[in-house]
Image (cartoon, rainbow, N blue to C red; front, side):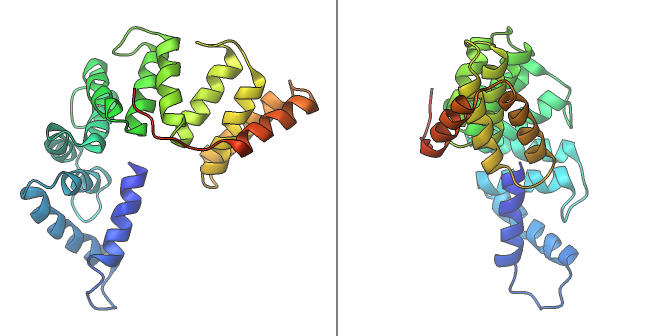
Length: 229
């Protein structure tokens, strides 16, 4: 959803930036909402998902998860992966819909099967915790790997945790450090970045200098790839 918010901000600055220079940001958000509602009503799945984000965050429209879920569902029913993932998130958190982990897993899987990294990571999270699906670390690892291979920072962090703890895979600090290092390079400055670097440094304390150098080499040589199951 953060990516979608970023896209929305660009939309605000570009698509509706033709207004007067003194237009307030609130007015721009309202204009964006009006434009998106028109596109969403015509069945544009991307616009439906973005409009859902606007309702979820209260950007230019009254905040409301129920209304957000309506637009996410419209996009999800068209097979739009990001709409499926965001709808799954509402079911996982019980926002605008009854909390239902099984329903969340259904929508995450639909997005994941299309290669959408957010859906893959979220589905992996449900397998790791056993919510809505049987707990299965090997299955969690599978989905984390697919998302991490695309450069999805949160999945790279989760994969690093799996290697550090030996869940679903033999414990391997070199691989753990590598994935933490990659995640740290992708998270912007803030709490998530701090969490990753702190965790990486804790793993480093268990490693030899040679192991750290090898992990850093692997991270430097790593390249993202598209990943579908």
